[in-house]
Length: 241
Image (cartoon, rainbow, N blue to C red; front, side, top):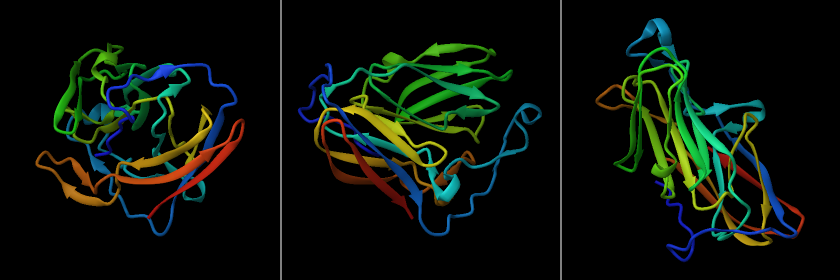
């Protein structure tokens, strides 16, 4: 599991005006032949959820851009404010989005948009962070305070074994999820030299667990050192193989 911690353990992130901020932008691409990922059988509520769902462990777009990688800048203790309101939606018997990133303190909620019961269960390592039954369509539960520690939260639906998601909680707002083209951009970065890390959940099939959930290999991380000049854009390219 990726450890997401700031230098000076315990130091709070400070929101300040970023003068002459720069940006980091780039792509995450898959190189080589991607593995064949079988559809995942649906274990219940097939009248609503369907018989199978495609695996989301590796989602490739044009030119093999990888959707759902997370890029974070490490060691930023002073900078821009966090962003917005994050909703992890149980919709059409999937978690939307499959990968979410936020900074601790950002508002976060779990929602059920379906007509069936979903039980959204988040784990930080082996520790339960939240375990929420959502029996009603339109139900929303705030989980902001439960995401107080940086780290990687693996989310499962206890009712539907084909459903899974990831929430990465970073110690600063300098984090982004790659889009359908594998692209990312992080703005308003204080000038300086940083470690920039890409995280991906893993994608090579390793069978199934005792409940029939598909298992994939360990998460991948790649770290590069990047210098960001005032009002400039530093380009960083990452590859999965």
